[in-house]
Image (cartoon, rainbow, N blue to C red; front, side):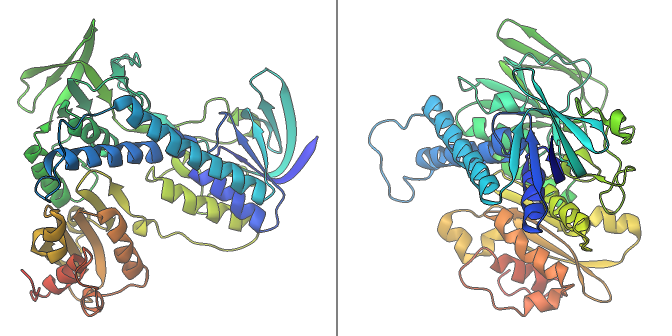
Length: 467
């Protein structure tokens, strides 16, 4: 029987990063993955493939709508080859997962392909595709099994016309009318992919706004932008039935007044969030507790009730984000090695990769009001930037929230081109507890999109220069 200091179950961003950090710290490390490729949801059917399709569809939309304005003329009709677009996405995924294979070899991490399940707190059975079982011994285990798409109890996902994000990444045709149930990150991103390619898209959201967990100002701005591109957005709608008849999908919902609404399309994407995935782990054998939401219970050190077993990422409490899982993977590894790392969960940014992108870190206005914290705000429109006009990316804004007395930055929220990259500046500033004046006095290269952050910080004291 092979023995290890640490075994990581699950090879997504949290799991493989945890394994690498364990190996760097001199721990003999194993990684167990039930699928044939490493990388988990993010690399295989999540973050990476969706970004590949977002980029490809963005290029197509630019060619159709914007090239002529730039003085680029393409004779004949610009056409979408969806099969080729999906193939490029698959190639990106293959290259990325292959990179994880390389990193495992480089760090001398032994990889086991098969379903990992606990025999007891220090022994794990790996059931391979051929049914054979290999038992390994491990002093410590990190559970990093991630999440799966959630569903509503009355919806039957047939993976043909009623689909999850996994199937939406490999459709054989462009939908005529894609109905998206759920106005969160995943639904809006994939909805925009197919909207650009020519589909009619209708979003049905239960809450009173899209991206409801983010600052309300961002929801308002993104709604305005998406409606301008002919998205149909129905908020405060409670879906109560999804029916399929042949190639037609019918979604029945009650609007906020209680009136029944029927929406018909040819595809329905169900994107109502994700749920922790622990099936097959046999947690009972190890004595590990899960809570009523199906999450593995952990303390502030990511330790379960069984002291040598840790859990990270989507399978524990907190935001279901790849970069949050990575930070937790690093933290768990370092704790096992005897170090004392720390994560400030308030400073883990959230991003929506629509165009314009949406990004946020820290407290929202709603949270500050609820907490009774007095704050001041500064906002700056992207259209006032020279860089935005040069690239024709004028939608969006940056909003900075600062403490009324100390001027410490409490939250930064933005919609705009490259917001996903720009938010890192706000994270750095807040990590070092910068004031809005600190950032306002920093030199920002001109012309850049990040000048909007400086201007929003200036606007906190009503002294923005370009608006």
